Image (cartoon, helix red, strand yellow):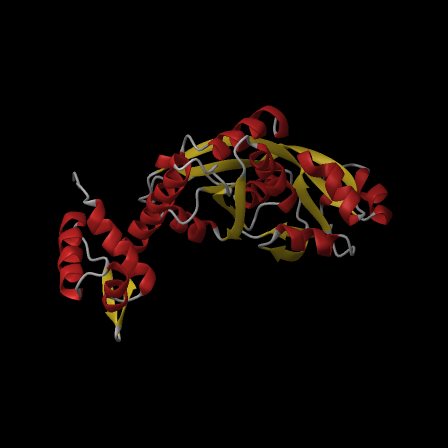
Length: 300
């Protein structure tokens, strides 16, 4: 569907959305409420969907309305910036870059992946969020975030226009407290049979691979805990509750920060990492910086 937008109508919508009612917008725009209401109806006809729904004496945005508002915010912010530049004022302020990571990802790896985006020629203001993969992909679909970091690619079953950017993979390292390392190093990995183990929940894509590997090796650990959050796995692991797995690419940081030691590396199981961006953001310089650094440095 080819939608030709009238930017005056878009400005009326933008003002009503921020003021919360047509009456308040009317006072700011110095236009009668009837005129604004009529122009909003024209805009909704062109968009093909309602932008507002009544809520008492005010108005709430529909899902389509929230999507249109985000674009409108960017459009009118750029308009103000252009006006300043044309008046000779320098462009100031950092542009927002919103990245949401799956809560299953180790925080150290998330930091290592995002950090290069903070050194671009044009300064950005980073907003970092996290949550379950399904939730953060839903936010990507309505352009509430610019990029999603995950250990699973976007499935074709989800009706989301976005790109998967494969960043790389890391083998898994098994960690234990210093007083337990020696006993499990001997005859590794078979020493893991009946060992107390802290595992990720099925939210992690790598969990199914680990379970398969255990069965193939005839290793049956004693599962002492399962966790959605990788930080909790490490925190419980440093108390000696059980052995745990982390990507080997962050081995040094895990040992230093949690006073644990590597028992051995599993070369048959790896954790994969993806950046997922909305189609219109595929050339975003911050996304490019994250992808390039991950592929050439972090997971090289």
